[in-house]
Amino acid sequence: MRLNSFDALNAFAEQLKRNIGGESFKTKVVITPSSVKEPGVVIKVSLLKTYILKEPPAAKSSRTLRVRVSVAGTAESMTGLKQAVEAIEALDHYLMSSNLRLEVPIPPGKRWPIVNSRIIQQVSEEDSFIDSPDSIAVQDVQDDRIVIITFPYET
Image 1 (spheres, rainbow, N blue to C red):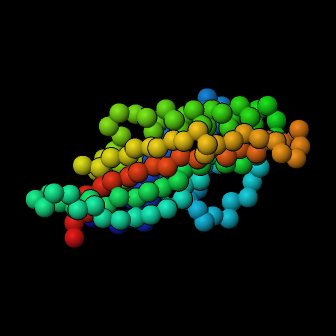
Image 2 (cartoon, one colour; image 1 turned 60 degrees about the vertical axis):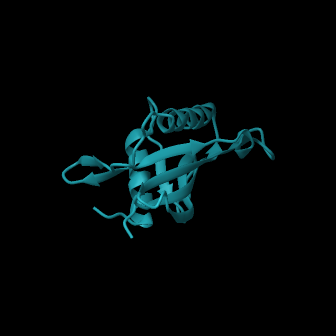
């Protein structure tokens, strides 16, 4: 199966949908741009860059996606704040799994891991905030990380 960047982005978002959730909630995962406007927190997946890596001349090329994954929205209660923190923790736990591979869904309801693919995250402490700039009733949530997805790409 030959993947292009858009297919890989969609497969990654679906992979997050299947694997991220808390005990009492399931967080919505959206690819931006999206018209989702709802209260609470969502996980946004945004494509930042796609490029081909030419490894040593004898090796096959790999396509790399640089993706921003954000837990974003508003926490309007302690339950909302709890869900935001659980979503951030669940995302960290999943993306820190060893040997994390890109998976493509295949019917009926199965997944095919892409051989020689990998998913790694880069986290910066400065890329996040849980803040209430204008109100004590609502807190803004924005937790960003950069995810690098590499998969085989035949030219």
